[in-house]
Image (cartoon, rainbow, N blue to C red; front, side):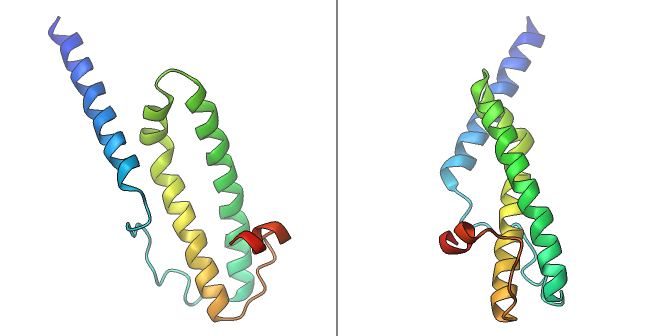
Length: 116
């Protein structure tokens, strides 16, 4: 009986935390080192951008699959959301540094270049 109360308490706590995280959004949070890519060449920015774009798509796919099951949002918050936010932040930093260095970021498709 006590064990089930602890489990329920833990699940409720995680659900509340994930809800607060989702409500807070990620725009104001800086999870990344803003100088991480400053000394990268255009070639390295492209290479890392390509890897991060692939990882971003993988995480999006995993999050969509998890959301279909029971407790999917909780799974997303625990397993994928933090890495997804960090990946998105890294991609924004690569975009910023690439623009400052006037790099042609080849890892993006034409439609991505227009949207971003």
